[in-house]
Length: 191
Image (cartoon, rainbow, N blue to C red; front, side, top):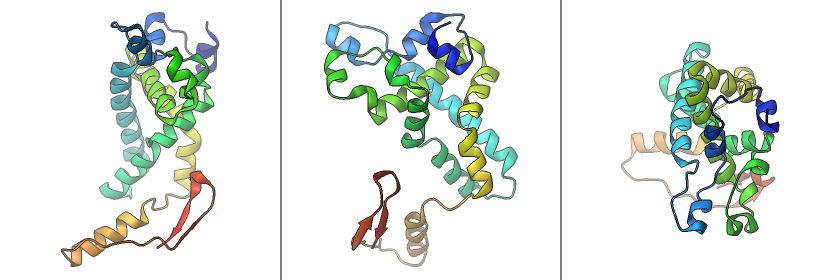
């Protein structure tokens, strides 16, 4: 078992799927020839992730309207959320990438970690089936799901305000930034 397989609690029957899930597109670009990479698995993993999270929200948030469920799902599958899951698994350490990508900080890049996390889901789905992928997703997102259960707050007040204003006027509102504060991952804006 590889260290990553130990970390996720799953041994791949087809180790090539895991290798593909951890291969950045820059490998093929630098070699100037076709080389498999994680993009197709990322595409599949995104769909599996959406389904698992949608099914979970549908079954556990029965009083929420469709629009609110969509917002909750968006929060759970956002690039930043996926980056955090990828970082928690230390996926950057395992990704095979071209030298240029690595030198430019590719191992810590949000898009790289998020894409690799989705690709890993796709690989798990192909190797072990839906239930294996579902178990992995629910395990990785457990803390986020528990937080939502405790405080399913509205995550897009600006969007809600814009929807309200557009329902009473054909003109889009214009925003002017007055100030901003807080850390990068939790900015507060005054408009």
